[in-house]
Structures are given as C-alpha cells and as structure tokens.
Length: 285
Image (tube, rainbow, N blue to C red):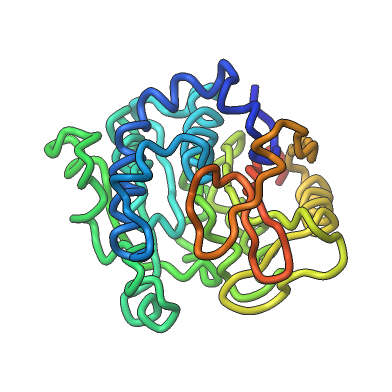
C-alpha cells in the first residue's frame, strides 16, 4: 500500500495512480480550468489543457488511493475533511457512500486570508458537488458542512471519524509549529484504527532555511521527521519515503507566473517546493 511520500513523475505511470486518475481526470481538468480563469489571467486555459503532470492532481489521486486501498471508502464509513475549498474529494467520497463532514474557514477569515478572493474557499455546502460526482439526493443525505479553524478543532469531533484528510491546507495554519500541532491534534478526531491522509508543502531546497511563519510555510525534512517521531511516540503508525525521484519532470521547476506544464516542482520565493503526502494510522491511546 501507499506510504508517506513525495510527489514524483513516476507516480503518474504507477499502477496505484490508474483508478484515481480515471475517476478524477475530467473533473481535475474542469477544476484547473476554473482556477486559471479566476487567478491566472496571463494564461489561456484552453491552450494549456489538458494538464496531467500537476501536483494537485497527484494529491487528489494520492488521497483517494490511500483511503480506498485501506477499505475506508465504503458505505457507513465516516470522514472529516479540513480546508476542503472546492475540491472534488468531498463529492467523490460521498459517491462511495461515506458520510462526510466537510469543513473550511468562515467567510470573514477566508476573506482576510485571501482565499475567498482566489475562489479557493468553500462558503457553504452548495459548491461542494459542482462537478456532479455524487447523486444530488445522496450528497444531500451524506454531506454536512461546518466552518472550522484548523487551529481550533472542535472537541466534539473526538473519536468520531474513520478517516480525516486535507489537500495542501495545514501549511496555512500560520507557522511550522502550528502546522505540526494541527497534524497531531487532528488524530484525536479518529476512532481507533482510523487513517489520516494529508498533503502539504515540502521544501526541496533546504533543511535549514525555509518559510517558517505567515500565510504559507514550507516544511523541511527535519520538520516532517519531527512530526513523524511525535506521532510514533503517541502510539500511531507512519512510514515515510523521502526519495524525490530522478526522472526528467522532477528536474523541471515551474517559475512565477506559473505555466503549469509540468507543475510537480515550483519556485516559492527562494525555495523549490513539491507536495508530500502523509498517511498516519491511529493505533495508540
């Protein structure tokens, strides 16, 4: 099964990627077209499409596969999504019969952070099935929405969910330390044996200098290893492979203003970043 790992070109040709990509490919094209039209006016979305080698597409497929192969995307399973924005995973999981609690910042906080203006914020439940991945009647029955600050997870979520997830969200908690705290705290939401799958930013350039505070942070190798050890000390299970890959597209770095072909590595200020996926099993008290 998948373990915690970095986004790499070879994943796009891997057997595990096939199912998730076949389910999400057309939806991702619509998702990225809309994102380009709203946020990247220097680009012609129609000229760029189709886009395949994109780390966000990898994140969606990675999260789907990690949960699916562990038998969690089944009727009766209960999932909690953090910072869901307008991603397609909420409706995809509901289409599998899962009961989903989708969460995002309240509108005022999202506007202050700039998320509402970039159209990456879920203002409510109505926008979470816009790609039609789930039957509307089933979606209405299975999906609930609540405003939640990831730095203040409600106590009532404790031990309520079979799985939790987020897609590049906890790097926006305000600092490296707050991101670490979120990853530890959200484990309390899981029932024993539950699975957490989260993706975030990984600093490929340095294990020392990084963006440590602010609206966006970049986690270093030592930050990931520290989080993993803390999780293990608490009795949880996590296995990590930090091999970055040597294929050609792994050597390409997308520079601002981004062109998105390929977009597995990108320049963020002084650093090159990619996505890392983390898979954690709750086994301890």
